[in-house]
Image 1: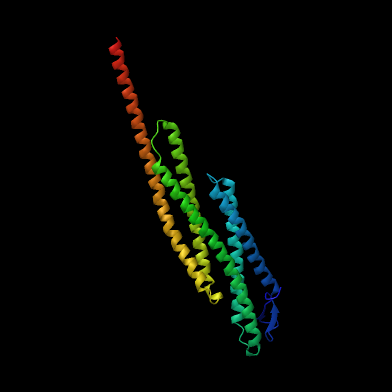
Image 2: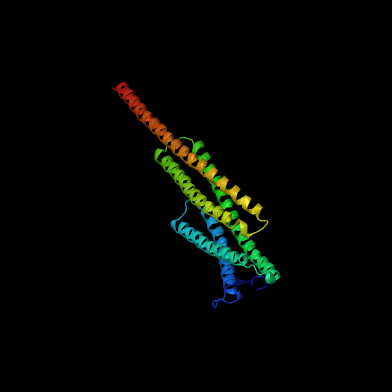
Length: 261
């Protein structure tokens, strides 16, 4: 695995000169964590598609999504901590004689860090895509709820409206969970910003996605409350119409009965 082997200089246990200690196991662990993240992102994309295509999100799907999210978080924290540990060890090496080797090792460390940032950016892009599509689902559901005509089938209409509200609330919960995950990802990128040179553009995009997520969550909350209000008003109007129809029927019935009598 060219490009992955790194050695760091550590103090000898005997108190003698510094010795170069290979850290292939550390590097292999980092690479394994990055590979796990990449695989989990692929699976999360599939779950995002399942959630978006289903009328309501099943609990098992949500549990699987939460498990994958936690797995990514665990692997990302492991990779980040080990990258930072290697960086500290490289920076503590002040032996001028090893300057050429040190530059090589720092370059190899940067390759690892860059790969880590790229995989996490891929994860963030999947989150943002899911967030935007969830936003579209909420917007369409609100339009349907607002434009639905009042019909004589009061019970059926109420069930349809309740189903629409349940879906909006489910999408809103998805967005809230996603907002929390994006915030954690943003904090992680800030923490590893110094590990990778020339990654400012990626970090800026993460920060932009974080800002957009917070703004959309606030709008989603307001839209959900708005949908609930519309449904309450619709139910009241339907009940009033129903009562008026009953009263009118009674009046007409009494009139006809009196006329016949």
